[in-house]
Image (cartoon, rainbow, N blue to C red; front, side, top):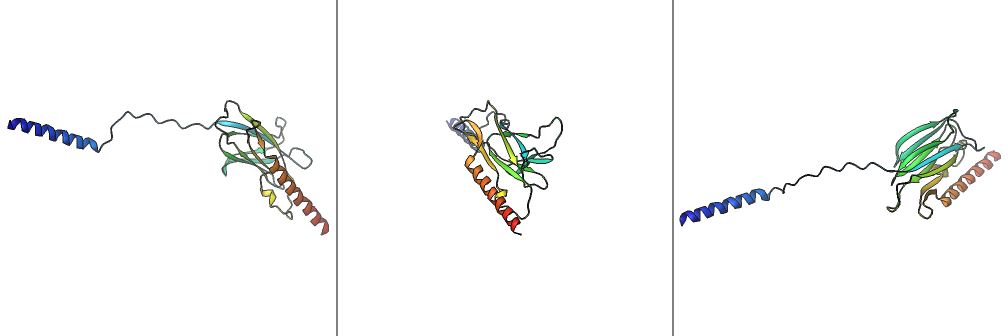
Length: 191
């Protein structure tokens, strides 16, 4: 009987020690391979052109694309036989971008673009948006407060299922710029 009690005690202690040893270790399972990072999905192709006050394309324009204030691309638009003065970029879904158009001697202009899309919008199609940016000669005496604002805010319009600019914003900015230009011209005439 003593040997049966000893064997039972040894089995009990062995079981207790084994259970205690495994209690500190998580159960080992087969590891799933790490998911590959998602590649960004292009949802919008934007194309633009820089025009002067006579609505003619401007040569030698510098165009920069920013995503969340980080410069991504830079291009210079020049006049050559096979080039139509247009610039274009492909933009990823659910990001904020700024396109900056500049040339020495002209006021730098920018266009802000949000590619945020509702989840229900299909990404099987590539959206397109084209715009013109009018550059005008720099004038050091001009009040440039509104010149630092983007000339357009572009985002997805769910009603028409397209990317479009905020017409009210653009009208407001253009009015303020025109007021500043007219006020500057009248100030120059009085000197």
